[in-house]
Image: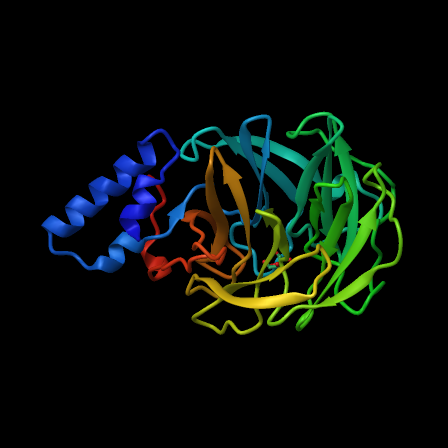
Amino acid sequence: MVFAHILADPSGGKLRDVIRALVVIALSLGMSWSLLFAQHQILPDFQADPSARVFHGRVYVYPSHDLAGSKDWDMRDWHVFSSDDMVHWKDHGKIFGLEEITWATKHAWAPDCIERNGKYYFYFPADDQIGVAVAESPTGPFKDALGKPLIGRNESSVRSIDPNIFIDDDGQAYLYFGNSRDKLAVVKLKRDMITRDGPIQVLEVENYHEGIWVHKRQGLYYFSYPSYRGDMTANLLEYSIAKSPVGPFEYKGVILDNRSRNVHGSITEYKGNWWLFYHIAGPSPYERRVCLAPLHYAKDGGIEPIKMSDPLLLDTGK
Ligand code: FUB
């Protein structure tokens, strides 16, 4: 498996060289195989909830911005990072924050972003409501498009957090969100990307907890999400599949156990290879780090589980 990942490296060989050197050192020193499964941190301390998007040949990661020393998820703004080789990441700085909105003052949590007709739409939760901001560039500056939430607090039976935006091949946009046991919500958006089109639907998805991420591959819809089954030493990213963007769903299994108190991630294709962006919690649950792992599909379309070591074997790339 490791060697398959090495061979699939699309970073022009840099990541492959690093991993190969690690393998050689580990083997020559007789070190544990677990070292080979170290988690590879890509963004600076502390970022979480990475939503990765490809815009015009470059990959952009929109994470939450955890605060060093914080005792709560009291984040206040968002940065964006980009790369064209998955190794070197540029911090474009703050793109949006609570200071730019009038309707919430806390909890700038997991965002997402998408392009339509040359504009970039940034969906963000703030104090259990979801807003949308718009910009001419993936790096902002973003402006609150509505001056009010797109999804209000308690509008459905799931919490109004963790937005994930998906545009299907027929052009229909779906905004997914929610934190609830076995349930997530979805609402269609009009082509302007800032107006709801129809009611909020609540979908039943086995083991779903929060952090929905939807991607489509070979006509199949993949719904990946942190499950509620994690405990203090293990958190699981699981997935279900469907033949339509609103189910029904077939539960498939676990993609990743990051052996940390919290996980949240996104799956994105870049230069012909698939990648899982995710975070691990640590040093505290409020100081998280964004990591990257290659993702592989089995012949039947299932996602091959990713084997991870203890987070203590974090490779920070320094
Ligand atoms: O970042 C704050 C919260 O932590 C997110 O909304 C959840 O998905 C979890 O990662």
